Structures are given as C-alpha cells and as structure tokens.
Amino acid sequence: MKLSLVIPLYNEEESLEQLHREICDVADENRYDIEVFFVDDGSTDQSWATIEKIAANDSRVHGIQFRRNFGKAAALQAGFNATQGDFVITMDADLQDDPKEIPDFLNQMETGLDVVSGWKQRRHDPWHKVFPSRVFNGMVSFMTGVKLHDHNCGMKCYRREVLSEITLYGERHRFIPVLAAARGYKVGEKVVAHRSRQFGHSKYGFTRFAKGFLDLLTVWFLTRYGQRPQHFLGTIGLIIIALGIVNYCWNFYWHISMLSNPTLIVADKSMVIASIVASLMLPHYYMPVFIGLLFIALGFLAELFVSKTIQPERCYAARKRTESQP
Image 1 (spheres, rainbow, N blue to C red):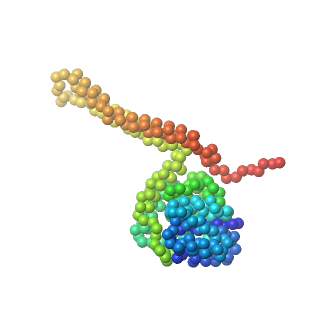
Image 2: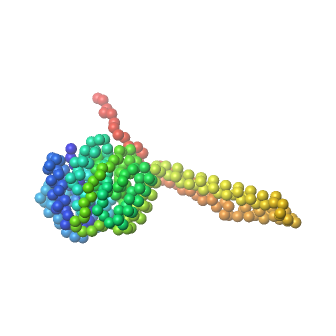
Image 3: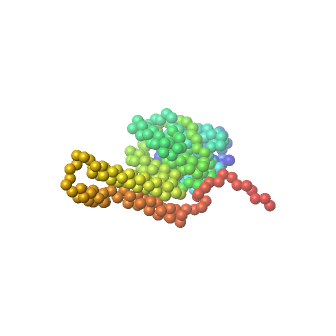
C-alpha cells in the first residue's frame, strides 16, 4: 500500500519543516510507503524555497508551484493528479492538523469506507469563525443528506478511485464528500485533534461564507438535477402555472359573486360584466402562466445541453466488474 499526502499551502514557510518532520515520524513508525506533495498556491514568502530544500533532502517529497494564487480547489486537484497512492490524505500546512491522526484514518478506511472526513470537535478558533462554520455545516448536511459535522475540515482520506471520478474547480473542495456520496461512495468521519495555530494567520475571511453558500446551491443542484435539469426547472414552472390558474379562478369567482350581491345597485349590469371581463384580461393575471412556460422552456434547453455534452460513463459509478474468462 502506497500512501499519498497532498498539502496545499499559501505563505506557510515557518511551518513546513516541522510538518515534514512530523509526517516522517509517523511514516517511519508505521512503515508507510509515502509520497508527499506540497502545492504552493502562489505564495509570496519563502515557502517554495523551503519546499525545494525539503525535497532535496527527501526523495519522498515533491513540490508543485503555481504561477499565482488559484485557490485551494485548484491546489488539491493538482496534487490529486500527481499522486499514485492507493489512499490519499489531505491536510493543511499550518500545523493545526496533526499527522498522528493518519493511522486512525487508514483504520477507518479498512471498515469499508471510501471517504473519511475529519471532525474538529473541539476547535481552537475565535467564535466568529466557529459559529458561522457550524451553521454552514448544518446547512450542507440538511440540503445534501451527507451528515457530517465538519465539511470544511482540511484533513480527509480518500480511496484512489474516488478522486478519479471527481473534478475540482472554483470552491468545490469543501464538497468532495458530497460529490463522492452522489457517485455512490461511502462517506464517514472521525474526530481529529485541532491544534492552535503557531505561525502566520488564517487566509480565510468572512466572504468565504457567502461564496460557500453559493457553491452549496450549485453542488446541490448538480448532484440532484445535473443529469435531469427539467425535473427541477419544469417543476418550478408547473407550480407557478398552477398558482397562476388558482389566482385567476379566485378572481373570476370574486367578480361573479359581486354581481349576485343584493346590495349592488347598477342600472346597467351589462356594463359591469364588460368591466369584469376587461379586468380579467389584464396581463398580470396571465403573467404567472408565461413565467411558468419560460421555466419549462429553459428546462428543455438545459436537457438539450446535457444530452449533447454529458459523457455516458458519468451517468453511473460501477463498484466491480467480473473478469472475462479465456
């Protein structure tokens, strides 16, 4: 068994050598055949020079340097593309993830899981980061059905075949377990130690929560309706049309009931009827129907796009195949 570690980083020069030593201690103690990929996401400090120094003294260490900051998802994808291990572990480079957790992750994988996500049950972060994170994690679990306490935890373990079926871009790195579960892989979690930051500062601000929510909506739509967008858009259209018809029928009934009202004294009821018909012909009574038909039309266009672009092998995920007999 070969174990790969992918460590994305941005301006973490102070922590890299210590992190490397801790990883090596765990690998030597457990006799793991490891490869370590440090992915420098456009650092402006001496992180890359430190990676080159570590790699020169340890053939198990490899480095990838981006020309500029492309984001964590791109850094992870670059690392995944380069690894060859049967299992891939991701962790942050700020020393808040403890390499001593690695054996427990691999033990969890032996129970039949395909993805094991870390859960920082006790966090050493300020409340203004912890509280929004818990709200976000609750939303992700509720909307996707993947019940994890900490979707944002950087320390995770994957089987090789999981990563071969998932493509990361934008900010989708937060939702790898969700994307894996949508492909039929088994996802679990384990409690991990969360250490206090020793060097530098957090690279994430408040804007990540807004971006995370928008990405959550995208992932929710793609995992549920990515191959059948008409089921989503068409349903919205039918609901709007139904509400519009109900609203029209109610207004028609209300106007007719006014004619039978004994308190209504009109010399020429034909003029009243004409005004009722004219009012019911106003555009705002028919607008919901037109909007609903627009949603259905968008659904047809989306279905046409999917049918022309989707790869057949992406419509399913096979677990095993029988060997052909000679």
